[in-house]
Every structure is written in C-alpha cells, then in structure tokens.
Image (cartoon, rainbow, N blue to C red; front, top):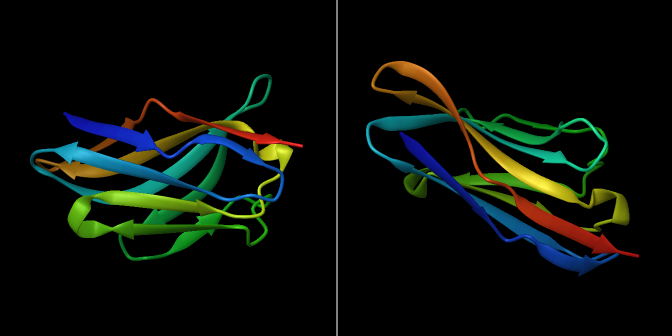
Length: 119
C-alpha cells in the first residue's frame, strides 16, 4: 500500500495565495505521475495540474498561469503553488499518485484538503 497525504488547504481572501503539499509514503514504489484534482459541490471532478516523472506538466484551462506544480523526488512530494486565487477556486483539492509498485502500475488518492477563497 501507498499512503497519500495532502496538506496546506485553508481560507484565503480573493487574490491570495496558498501552497498545497502532497506526500506519498510506503515501500517498494516509485512515482510516475502526480496529479491535483479539485471537486466542488454539484460539479464534476476536474484536473488542476499534472506532473510526470519526466518533468512535463499539464494544467486545467482555468489555471491560466496562476498555479505551478513542482515535485521533490527524494521526498515523493508534490507541491501546488496557487496564486491570484478566486472565489471560484473554492473546492476540495485531491492528490492522485500513479506509481510503479513491485512491477505493477497502481493509483492512489489522498483524502483531500479544503481550499476556500472568500470574496
């Protein structure tokens, strides 16, 4: 098993910044891809950002240069720096980790962290 734990959510004002962290822990695995998703009530889960092991990144169209995803491979940790936050960014942010574990490809989710942006 791989455990995925997010942190860093909270309440911030319109235009503010937050950094989310996500760490994967366990044995016998290597991380292929880190992804951040978000989900708010009544909306489908949507991709926020993706960072592959090779360093390529993808962002949701709504990000528009405001967020940056990065990783610390030694710590199996991914960061999401979010700037110029808007009230519509309010959601639960979930980390997804695709790993190679003992030769098998597996995916794990964290429990999510709440981000609330006040107007």
